[in-house]
Amino acid sequence: MARKTFISYKYSETQNLRDKILKALGDDAQYYQGETSDSPDLTDTTTDNIKKNLRDMIYGTSVTIVIVSPNMTKSSWIDWEIEYSLKETRRSDKTSRTNGVVGIIMKYNGGYDWIQTKKKNIDGCNSIMIDNKKLYSVIRNNRFNLKEPVYSCDKCKTVDWLTGSYISLIKEEIFLSDLSKYIENAFQKSKDIKSFNIKKIDN
Image 1: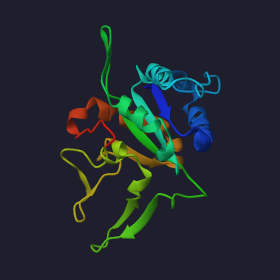
Image 2: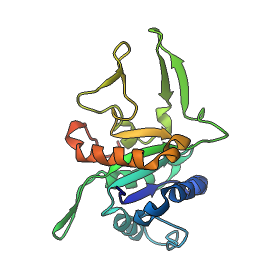
Image 3: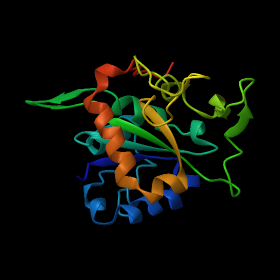
């Protein structure tokens, strides 16, 4: 089933990936509520007006897709967009529930070394380490936050990369190969939000 989505991204370096996501959505792109090439230019407007426009785009969506890129944390808006996505917002008699959120790691210079390193643990298991300095704290704080974690490896207590975090991080090509799967995973976690320790503010 298609979900209403919003894409949070740094325009200057991820516009092409945003367009790839919209193309891969196919017919489901009609449910996309974020910016497009036809959206009004907000660069010369006030902060309050930008926030109002963003609220209107995010309100009523159920999944926020965050493109994780090398200079993401220099954006003026991505952290705010994530925080707003995690809120429950009421307008008259309708409440927009907390969105599911999924992070898409952008391929940069042909790979992902800009944010991740592979490591072999002393127990012999392999793991992937993410450079947390590349992430907003609102993303970091909502990873590995399942209240009763399910381990993919009992020996090294590795948490399942997809189900163990409210905000899962997925490589670009993996996400593009099966968007519906990962969007639906984020949505289902939002329906089971009480199973996660959610932190809604970037601090």
